Length: 127
Image (cartoon, rainbow, N blue to C red; front, side):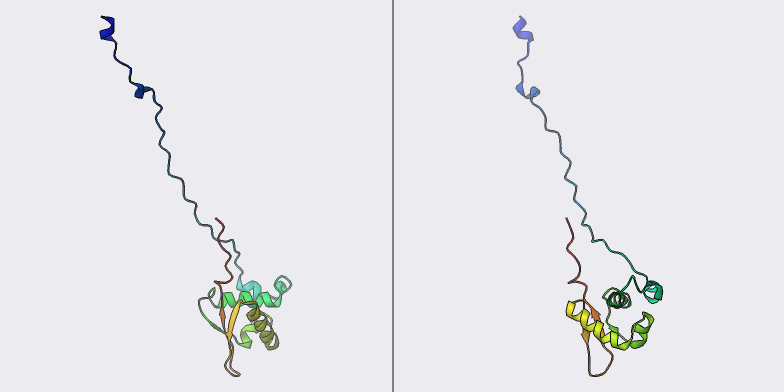
C-alpha cells in the first residue's frame, strides 16, 4: 500500500535550470579626442608663442574651410589677421603640402586655393 502512494521520481526536477544571459552590451564607437581652438586665439598676438606660424596657418585653414568642407582662397589680408606675411604664406603652404595636410591649387600668379585633407589625418578609432 505504501508503494502505491509514492510517485516515481522525475530526474528532470533536480536538473539545474540555465539562467538566461543578457545580450552582451555593444561598445559604442569612440571618437578620437580633440580640442577646439578659437579664431580669437590665432588673431591675438599674445598667443604667438603658443601657436608657431605653421600651426597658426593650419588651424586658420581648418577654421576657414569649416573643417575641410570648403576650399579657401588664401589672401595676404587673411594671413595678416594671424600675423603672417606673404613670404611666410608660400613657405608654410609648401611645408603643409609636403606633409600631406593640404592640397594647393596655383594657377599662374593668382591666389592659391587651399583644400584641407582631413581623411588622411584622422586617427583610427580605438575599440
